[in-house]
Image (cartoon, rainbow, N blue to C red; front, side, top):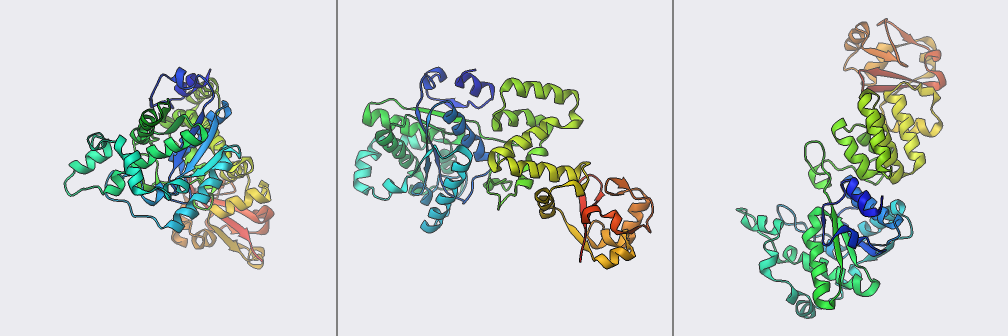
Length: 417
């Protein structure tokens, strides 16, 4: 497939200002704008970031614009005015996002900050040179602005109302200084991107293009994003690689094919073949495991992806805990509750019911005994038949063992000093 065919087959095409064959007829200089409203991007943004990576690998030059200037204003929200960001916070967030994007896309991207020109613009000059090319009639028809104006008790400040002028000016500036002729983004940025396309046509008589991919939603139609309360961050300090891996691993069958096409670089034919296998044996969840591994590898690297997969298999699969490497074990220990049994008490025989109750796997010793009698507790993968069973060093090979209640509730038992 060529690039246009591949993007179409993956479902990554939402809006485009010209025919795809024209847009992708030759290598272009492409830009993506990101406002630093947080110090990390999240899973919803990742589709567009990976779209940039796809374009880079297809031979296009890539420019990442970090909105140090526009970030001090904020794109209009669906409801309510944004809090104006502190300049130092915006600068800190900008640096963090830049490092994050360079890690995912590669050092070959050119990174710019629109604070370098927006903070130098003189108001009267801007109104004469840029504002004259936008009409209020056109701006109030835009979806978010129109809804804000039509909703009782809502309003919109001039600050947010003028945001699209600034974004259009960004595109014009990059077109003039770097030859940028394609801006990409998610579909909610479509009208803002078109502002730049039209501004370049009017001011320069030049041709520039716009392309957007769909907003990513979950199975309930809720978009991924920090404002929706379900953010999965790309920063490992906010969402650990293990938690990130779990997010993708736990996707339902109805979404996994879509996410494989959006979030991985597997050829579409390979994804189709994988989904055929998955539909024949959905219980094996090979599609979800592939998705989790591929996306975690792209964001956090092969080592972190391998450690997350191994820790997952030990905590929720059949892999013996003591077989984990030091790094894999540390990954599991960071994510699961652990109960440490002093070595002397373990050598004397430590009651299992006491361990799992004090470790929080059950609310009480009596409940622990009841579950053990009902074969509801496993130790290292095997049901525990005796509520009076005691633990000895041999039961914790390598100093660790795993107690499990049901499929997802686990407790790591560790040998102490």
